[in-house]
Amino acid sequence: MLSDEELDRYARHLVLREVGGPGQAKIRAAKVLVVGAGGLGSPVALYLAAAGVGRLGLVDDDAVSLSNLQRQILFKTADVGRPKVEAGREALAGLNPHVAVDIHNVRLTEANAMALIGAYDIVADGSDNFATRFLVNDACFFAKKPLVSAAVTEFEGQLATYKGHLPGFPCYRCLFAEPPPPNTVRSCSETGVLGAAAGVMGALQALEVLKEIAGLGTGLAGRILTYRALSAEFRTARLPKDPACPLCGTAPTISQAPGHG
Ligand SMILES: [Zn+2]
Image (cartoon, rainbow, N blue to C red):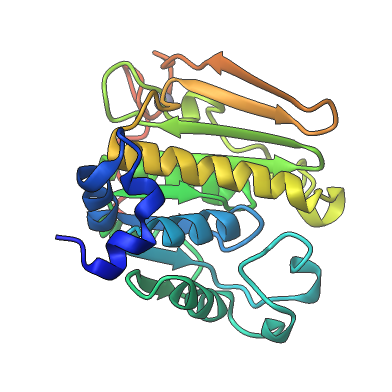
């Protein structure tokens, strides 16, 4: 049962016929892991906390820097130099004290990925590098957890939901089989990113997480959404499962969970 304070706090959710009390109860019971407390993870964590997700995990081993504040709206100027997860937990607790925030001041690695992801129902990946994206995808596949994954660079964003553990739904490796060779991809610090474009993608990512939790509408599993900020265009394309996928295809070559190989 929701308390009087919660009934008031979530009033705009509760009047939505598609959400209502049962939807809000699902949101409160949900445990979401947010990988990367950056330009995407910031709006994701803020919207999920505001929405009343019962347990949020934050994974990031970085400290807040001044150049983060242009897009990482979870942090304040006074947070510069602090561990991101600590400053993030404080901001989220201030926004909604009903949300339990677990902080993981570590880099996601092959050794810890399965344990971290296994403790949550759904994962939102907003990490800034391909090694982590592939690791999160593989761990989610073996842990059978839905993955809502967003990326943003310069003026463009991408968003999809991966459920490769289910028949008919793709994983991230159905889109890209292998990570690109190191040093062939320029990082966000080299290419730049418009802060508000990261905000758009992070807000969409939080929304898709909430849709998965509350069973609302049609999710982005099997589709990919792209956003071009400069032309103000959204496109959604079908993303089928690849039978040749090395992870979720018919003859997979990756047969063991990360850290168990
Ligand atoms: Zn796949």
